[in-house]
Length: 352
Image (cartoon, rainbow, N blue to C red; front, top):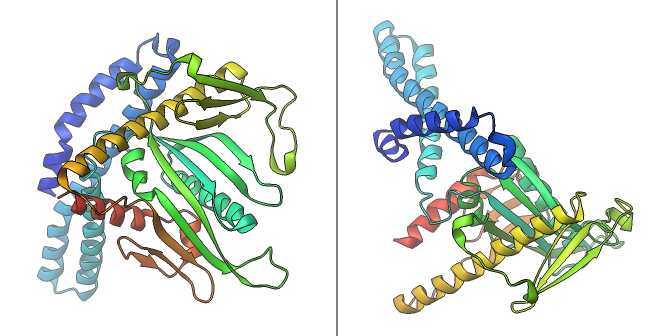
């Protein structure tokens, strides 16, 4: 625990919290909504992190007392309780230790998550929607704020693609290990003959762009299309052409936003997503140069990375870390912390 505290630095957190609390108390805070949201989000995150650190330190200190009492009274029940608490504390320390491994350049950022249906037809579209729900449920479990920017619905069922934000510090560092191709094996509910179907969905995780990133976009290199927002089955969500699609002509990158706000707000949000994609493109190019200098021939780790098998047996397995569980429904309901933690450790090991 001492090494974790050395990295997390509770005293530094307390000092940062004091500064942020002063900023949050400013009567002019919400004159700049974007900056206000960053301040309040960062403050909430640090307060939670400090509380968890202090509570874990107290539990560790109490453990010694629990074992001393059990030994002095020779109480088997008390000893069993102490040993159970020891197991729980060890798990909590491991979870906190994972956070100390998030030291990448963009790891502390909020995250943009893009999910797209790949091979597999309607099953792939249905799977993409299940993955969207999985991540949103995961965020809900942790009380993380999310915002869906755009969802393109498939004709029969599911979605073609979606983009949403997870608005909490370190969301990018945590979720970036989810990037890659996810595979689902099941008896297709859309196949009249009840055959087994394999389908695929791609997950892309991007760091939210900040002002210091200097991603310049020339308006002349953009094509802007406006259209009417639509929901499942092509139903109109609103009666105005407020949805915006941006095409960055030099790279061919296309982003959309249709979260039922004004056209101006949708364009601003789409620009933020486009900037995030261009930032990630630049990061990948820089990483490719570094890999070439190092002679790294391992290739990208972000291709096919996890299998969700519902038939003929029940299992979800990470193909990189070998972490697996036998309850796919729990995973699809958002119970993915074990996969995130093993993925972060795996990535850190590869960086050595």
